Amino acid sequence: MKEAEFKVLKTMSEATTRMDLNTFAQKVNLTATETTQEIQELARKGFLQKVGSGYGITEKGKAAIRAYTPVPSEKSFQFYSGIDLPLGFTAQTIEEFYRITKQVYSDSLEFHLYRGDFEKWFSEVVKDSELANAVDGLKISNLKGEPLRKELSKTINAKYNIEEL
Image 1: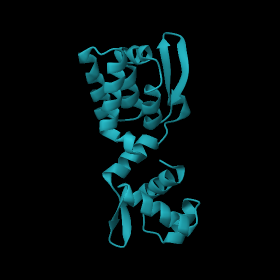
Image 2: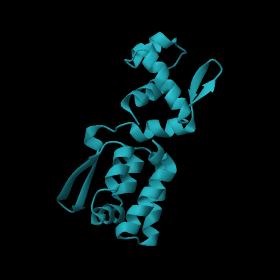
Image 3: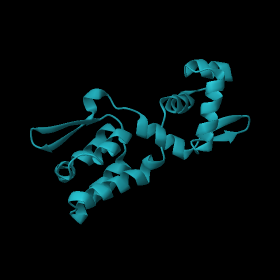
Image 4: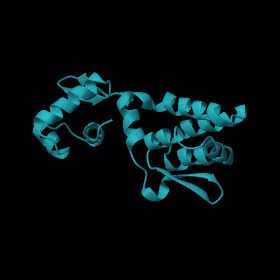
């Protein structure tokens, strides 16, 4: 998702009253023409839908906002391969977390999953207990290596549809 698209979605979600195009464009720091193009693109992708004479955010749009909204940097997820063995990868958003899990060594995923780190971050920091429970449920299968990576990606994508963002 482009930064401008995220700004438009986020601003729409935070708006408490209707506003004209010029006012909205100023809030997202785009021209009126650029704003119109971004809104049309977001609608085409299914993040927005026409509502009367304006636009509303769809469930897909709400999921995108959650996936791209950063947590405070001190609450970022730090990836390790073991105790005191940081990998240097940090996720501040669900989308970053998803992308990083596709890159790090699978032993890092095993380390964090079986310690409960993933579900703790999703539950306590991201505030998504549904995803935390789904990730916690992966432990039952005792997955390792690439099968774990695949199921973790599938679980996150099922909730946030990140592959389409």
